[in-house]
Image (cartoon, rainbow, N blue to C red; front, side, top):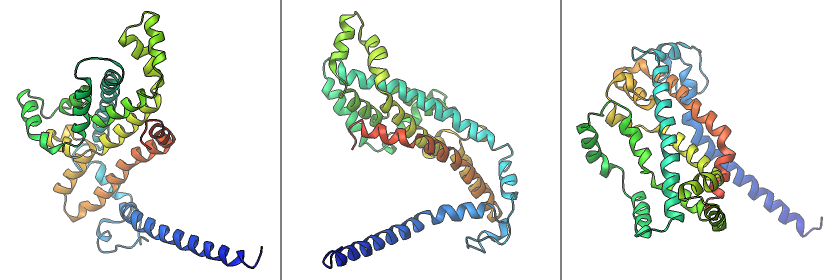
Amino acid sequence: MTLTTAPLLRERRIKSALKHTGLLIFVAFMIYPLVWMVVSAFKPADQILTDPGLIPKDLTLDNFKDGWHALNRPFSVFFLNSLLVTVGSIVGNLFSCSLTAYALARLQFRMRKVYFAITLASVMLPFHVLVIPQYIFFSQLDLVNTYWPLLIPKFLATDAFFVFLMVQFIRTLPRELDRAAWIDGAGPFLTFWYVVLPLMRPALVTTTIFTFIWTWNDFFVPLIYLTRTQVFTVPVALNSMVDSETQSGVGMLFAMSLLSLLPILVFFAFAQKYLIRGIATTGLK
């Protein structure tokens, strides 16, 4: 090491240390609310708001025991409800969005580009614009307080983001594969099912991951259509605990919120590498 390079190395180390220190401070600010919620879930109810520190004086599991039956039924009911809606949404998006994307990316028909442009434009349309007409439509069909208003749109390819994601991926596949299938006598659907769909695994996995996270955490749509306690999903059930409980219910709310995060954390931990791979191979770089 020469005398001229030593100051440069020292300067780089100082910059690197400052950068990492700033990032650590930023991370601490970001995760502090989550850590406080986790700690508060194990605090006695009368200490949560009076003692905001991260080191609890006493530990208890009463918040979990009381919160599990806070709405006059086991909280497992709401977990099962959310699981049902989430799985149905995943199946619906995989089925409808893949078929729609194949048609827009491979088939030739009139106004195909117009339909694709409308699909992309719907991504920019605020969902709240459609809430009232959709609610009136499902209400007239007597489907309020059922899961059909949450699931039927998924089977109609209304999530344009996933349609775009799959269209971008299908366009990267060689068209020679389609022509080879046509020469063998396969029609559009058989070509899609046996040739294109098996090659769409990265896009399908990405769609599954995003649909799981967004549907499990969705609060607004279930709040509109579900008003009976027995059909609540987890976010709506947590909101009901806020509305129905006093200050003593804060601990139960934190305890159940912590449990509701576990499926997301576990799912994301196992699916993270597939998420990164799927985004990297669908043109969203």
